[in-house]
Length: 70
Image 1 (spheres, helix red, strand yellow):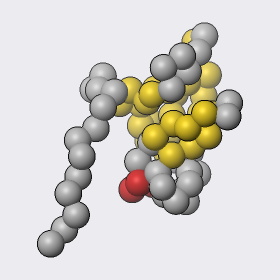
Image 2 (cartoon, rainbow, N blue to C red; image 1 turned 60 degrees about the horizontal axis):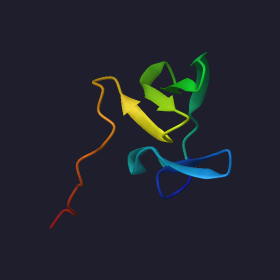
Image 3 (cartoon, rainbow, N blue to C red; image 1 turned 135 degrees about the vertical axis):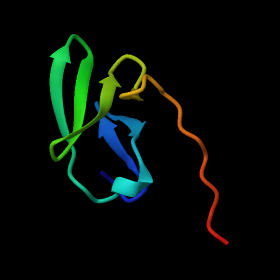
Image 4 (cartoon, rainbow, N blue to C red; image 1 turned 90 degrees about the horizontal axis):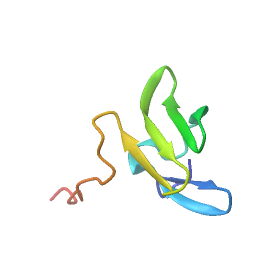
């Protein structure tokens, strides 16, 4: 993970989460163009290679924008 919360996948950018910056993620192939994304033993979701998006365990592909703390 880079400092801005994403990974490079085949020369493309995939946003993951700024919370995990500078941490190691695991990717496990589970089907054609679908990869399980792990942080340690925790499954974060699934990377869909064609869309270059990570779908979380609840099926969401978009995230809420967080606001800076006051």
